[in-house]
Image 1 (tube, rainbow, N blue to C red):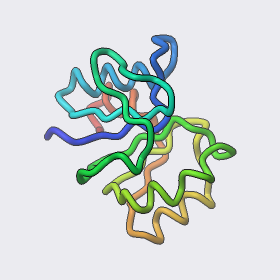
Image 2: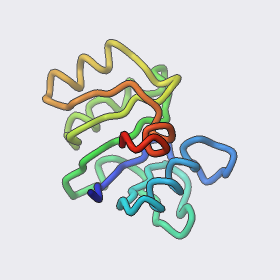
Image 3: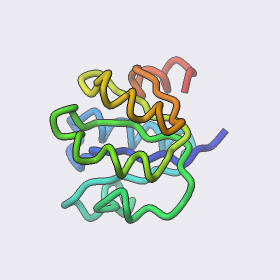
Length: 121
């Protein structure tokens, strides 16, 4: 099943896990919406500068921003209200997870790349 997936913390650098996730998600047939404040495009996909610029329902938001930088983005994620947020390794935060779950967002602590590789996405 194809999903609309926001990659928060998308990266144009091929060595980054967020970049690898974008490529794998797209190859798996998902509609990818990369979010990065400065990049214009990644792999031919237009990059969105801010969560507030997204005006569509989102199935999954996969997180590639650490908790220290994530606090200022929590309200935007809650307003976007994706059905699910994936906390990739290094992004976990019990406090932020609790805030998302309080607004009805399902939270998963896992690795998007591993989930795709194992058919658990």
